[in-house]
Amino acid sequence: MAGIYDFEARRIDGEPLRLDQFRGRPLLIVNTASACGFTPQFAGLEQLHQTYGGRGLVVLGFPCNQFGAQDPGSDGEIAQFCQRNYGVGFPMMSKIDVNGDAAHPLYRWLTAQAPGLLGTKAIKWNFTKFLVGRDGRVIKRYAPQDKPESLARDIEAALAT
Image 1 (cartoon, rainbow, N blue to C red):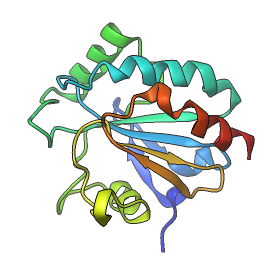
Image 2 (image 1 turned 90 degrees about the horizontal axis):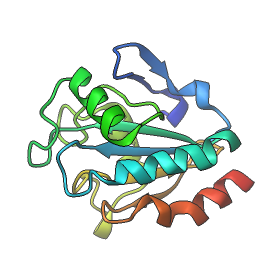
Image 3 (image 1 turned 120 degrees about the vertical axis):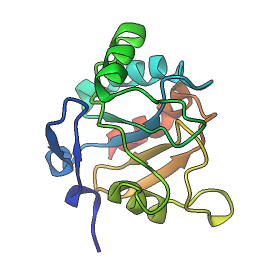
């Protein structure tokens, strides 16, 4: 069975990114959108990146257009939006699907490791978050309405192990 470090994604600039380069570091993986009611969470995610990045946390944003077509732009447009409006400095990936037959293999793995409410594996909306520990195991899945700052205690615990 695959583990988190077996996956690869494409950065928003098109370059490949192997997750094994983050071995031993906690990850916060988030499916994002540029025109969603939760889009202001980019500011909180960037704050987590700035606060905890030096201690090892890696925030990874995965744009997705599957929920209300709220991220229809190209990767370049999404990158510009995130930088211009939120000063995003954490790695943003190329746009992916998180549900269905075309779901990125990483998201199939994440949802199998940490099912949602009532055991559902589907991602319900933009800004669903997964915290992965230093050991590569999913610690917790967070709902879109869970604000990034509310994850601080869990991130601190993940960094302490």
